[in-house]
Amino acid sequence: MYSKKAMSYFKKPVNIGGMDDADAIGEVGNLVCGDVMKIYLKIKDNVITKATFETFGCVSAIASSSMLTEMVKGKTIEEALKITKQDVIDALDGLPAIKIHCSVLATEALAKAVENYRK
Amino acid sequence: MKYNNIYTDYAATTPVDPRVVRAMMPYFLTNIGNPASMHKMGQNNLKVLEKCRNTVASFVGAQTKEIVFTGSASESNNLALKGTMWANKAKGNHLIVSSVEHDCVLESAKWLSKNGFEVSYLPVDEYGMINPKDVEKTIKKNTVLVSVMQANNEIGTMNPISEIAEICHKNGVLFHTDAVQTCGKIPVNVQEIGADLLTASSHKMYGPKGAAFLYIKTGTKIEPWMHGGGQENGMRSSTVNMPAIVGFAKAIEIAKKEMAGDEKRLIILRDKLIKNILEKIPTAKLNGHPIKRLPNIASFRFAYIEGESIIYWLNEYGIMASTGSACSSPKLTPSHVLMACGLRKEEIHGSLRLSLGKWTKEKDVDFIIDKIQIIVKKLNKLSPFIKK
Image (cartoon, rainbow over all chains, first blue to last red; front, top):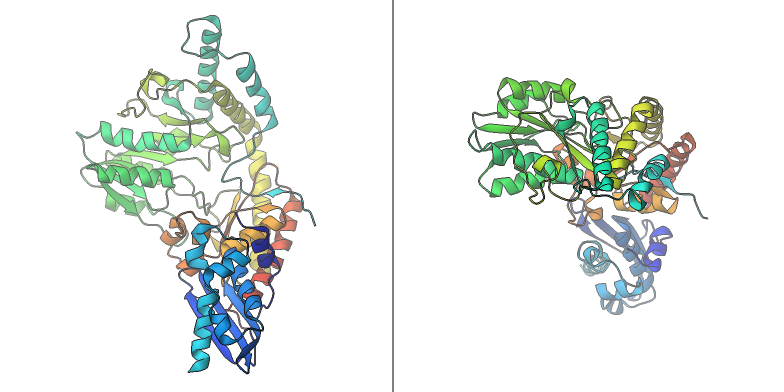
């Protein structure tokens, strides 16, 4: 059902956990639906220097969260916001169609974090 | 690291006992006559078919002619509900089913409700158990049939079905029970239960897929659902699946001898699993009744983590299990059984069912206990709901 790459990001997710000195935090999803993602960003001179995450959810929720935190590292906020759901899915060599709508929350969590940061 | 497979999904389907496979083989290769044929090979198989029917009947305390072989438990349940409601239209149009039945019962009920019949759904308590008093309250003048499963396939809770049957009969109502998870695991007797109709399946008791039966008590009015050549005394047209039925009967012969010992052994393993998981994992809770449960099903829920993730991690360690989480279902809906128990959706997301069987060893259970602790720790680390 899942690609090798998605499974490897699920089994050995990178950038996990919270961040005590985060400059921005974004949380999306809800417990009732079954997927919640929280993203933590460290931002310096408009560049994301570090991103970590915590996710409640299935394989694709965890894998896509981890993947996005890898993808945004070193990017400016504007560049990071340009990453689409599809970019995350492609980076994982695809995800099952049924999972895409509910479990790929990462880009929304990022947008939320940036929104909070800019407030 | 490569792990050996540990199968703990026996409630979904069981492996076929090698002795059953051996008994079936001649019916694929040499004894291939159609029991409806007049020649020797056909007539020989007709005799074997009736012997199998007798084996099944005596196993559940029925008369031979009261057993109708079908292709699956879903088919038996469809026939029980649709056939009985249809045949008893003159008496009434009201059907009562429990809210934790298997989908094949619930979907049959739904179809009936779309076709002029009235359906009531019985609630369950927090353990998923049906209260006989609720059955009594729900029965009306036009009630024809009540269908309540003997034990639930997801959480293992056993229902007081003989009490329910008694209430039905006091009110002139027929009683059907889905005994798919019990028959072959614990003693099932149609007389003791007081069932008018009872469903059981071969592939849940180490027999092959493709064989099941419906017990129909003599005198029960029921309309056949599958029309054709008139096999099974007109109740189920279709060419008789000889190898599967021979296998089913062999599985029952084995169960007769080995069931009691298996049951004792499985209860010990199940209880070890439950005790250790609940003791060692503070976020774990048991689903289903603590005592009145099937010998082989342990169902849990883990707070703050999601079931599909648990299943995939177990899979990495070679452990095959299942979950009621919405994420794992093709419809993306959480388990209707756990919903009926009053659990919140977020609790259901973290559910896990382990069902044990004949070939589950104590060292498998120890391995599972060990690995579940590791998995829960891993997923807790990722969870946004746990303060670190």
